[in-house]
Structure formats: structure tokens, C-alpha cells
Amino acid sequence: MKTVRLLTLTSLFAASTALAHTMNVLPSHYVQSKTGGFVTVDLFASNMTFQADKGVGVEGFKVVLPDGSIAKPTAAVQGKRKSIADVELAVAGTYRLEMGGQPRYFTSYKVGGEQKRLMGDKQKAAKELPKDATDVVTTQGRNRALAFVTVNAPTDAVLKTTGQGLEFSFDRHPADIVAGEAVTVTLTLNGKPVEGIKADLSFDGELYRNDPARQHLVTDKAGQFSFTPANAGRYLLEASTEAPLKSEKADKIREGFTLSFEAALP
Image (spheres, rainbow, N blue to C red):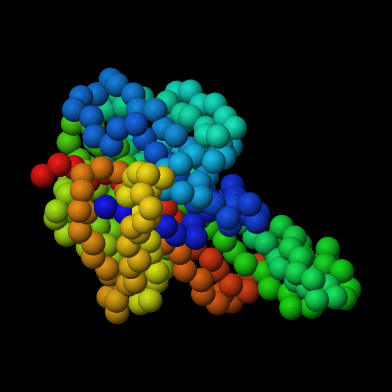
């Protein structure tokens, strides 16, 4: 199976460096049979599926408990190649592990034909742009990297969509994805399904294959696409979209996410 790659750099990577990498939230386990244990979560940016290239700031990482409340990891450290967080699984149910999610603004412009950029919304840009700036466009970017971990039995509270930004839903619980069984994904933007959103699905072990074997998927009129994990293992799904935005802060919106998940043996 292959993980889907979105232009989904977490909000921590709103700068150009982020745009060049894929953010990953990669837990040591996706399913646990009993409470009281831990998962260790790798947090990193990568150019190749699940190959850690750069550790990221752990302050942007949060744990959403099965009841929807927010918790911090038990321990976290930022490394050069990857950052690591330990998450306690104290109660049964499904947890959401998430990086990013907060809107970030950047303004691109040209001076003498040279492309430039500053971090900030339209109001900030108006004060800082050089007088000879042209082709000024302010973008509101929001990107998330996620994974779900289920303990004992799956629950749905952390899977609910909010109607804000680019969101996804599966036709089954993430803990119930099995190799060889088709999965349908619905993508919505601000609560509405959108046709034509592109996504990439990639499978673990890309470093050891001559062919990355990624699946390139596109949503239909219902905002949906389907895939069938060919093998058991870890996958990455990435998706992003861009649209005009009428706002005092931005001219367009760019939303994206990356989701790591596991396909179980049949």
C-alpha cells in the first residue's frame, strides 16, 4: 500500500523549508489491546516515505484523548533527524495524535522581478512591504499531520469533522483497515465535498524500491476516492487544496494534511 502525500507541511513549516518536505506523525503502534501502556511517536519531516530527514519542534504536538479533551505527551524531545514523544494510553478508545492545525499567513511578492516572501497576513504586509512590491498575494496556510491510535476498542469522538478547512473521513474506522479490502475516503473543504482534490498514497519501504509505487488519487464529484491496500503495513496519505479567499487577512487559502495509518493482515 502507499501513503498519500499532500502538500501538507504542518503549520510549523509555513516557511519554504516546510513546503519542501512532508510532515510525519508516526506512532510505534496503531492498536493496543489494553490500557496502561505507551506508544512512542516519531515526529519528523521527510522527502521519502517514513525516512526521517529533519526533527521538528515538539511544542506543536498534541494528543486528543478518546473523550475529545486535549493532553500533552508524557515526554518529548526534539532531535536532529526526528523528534520523539511518549504518549500514555491510560483509557480505552481512539486517540488522535496531531501536529500543526493552526493557521499561518505568508505574503509573496516581487521586487524587480525577484520573488520574495514575508511571514504575515495582509494587514502586517501592508506595513512591511517595500513600496516597489508587485504581484502581492497573501495566503492563509493550515496543515496537519495526524495518526490515530486505538486501545482495546475503537471509538469515534476524535474522528468527527468540524466543517473547517480540509478534512477527511473514511468509510470505516482507521483501526479496521485491512489489506485487500477497499477503503473509500471523503474529502471536504469547510464542510463541503470538493471535486478534483489530488492525493497521494504511499507505502512503507520506499527507500528499498526502485519504483516508489505511489498511488495518485483524485476526488470525484462526491469528494471521494477509493483505494485498496495491497499489503499489510504502514501507509501515508497526503492531500492538499487551494482556493480563493475573501478575507481581511488573506487572498487565498491553502489547506493540507498527512495521515499515517496501518493496514492489518487479513
